[in-house]
Image (cartoon, rainbow over all chains, first blue to last red; front, side, top):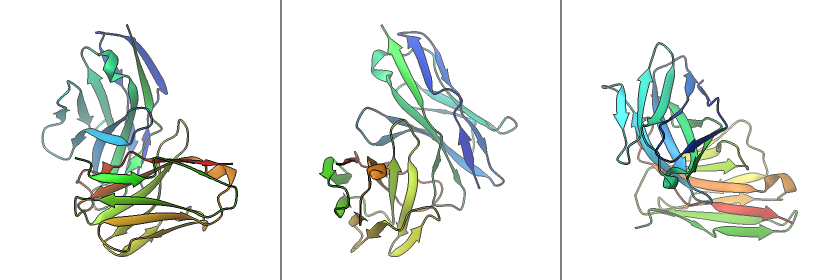
Length: 113
Length: 113
């Protein structure tokens, strides 16, 4: 079985500042890792994913995440945030032969002017 | 180009009155999921279909049922909604298991009065 821990329920940050949203996972098998973003009253959108290969993955809007197997982490980072990045961010894990996406409890990123 | 469409976006139902939420997809994906998301919580998987094979999560209440009459459509039936069933219900699809992206609809927010 897999589980995901997002330690920070809310992260306030000023516009143009860097941000890191933390995600740790637990699994007895190899996993795939995902970050999803959810805007108010919307569904979830895939931001980026790690399947294999390079441990650093990037999204088209400037986010990146690094898979660290030894620390079982998949933290999300952005060097300079915008007001429009304000949203809920969910880290998720899937076992490699599993249908299920297991989500963390989410981190609300609040970007202030 | 909406790919996973949920209707309605907002649903108000009376306590104990059966309600059906619908989901359709234009992606021709094999797997369809229903998640329940309560306020400020992670989405929780209720059940999923792989083609016509139905897979119920062990902790999904019997009050929740699902139908998938064809590849494109999937329904969530709540037989006797209680106040605790008020939530956002998210439908998602994926091509297959594990490493493929899950595409989410915009959700149906259910209110029970």
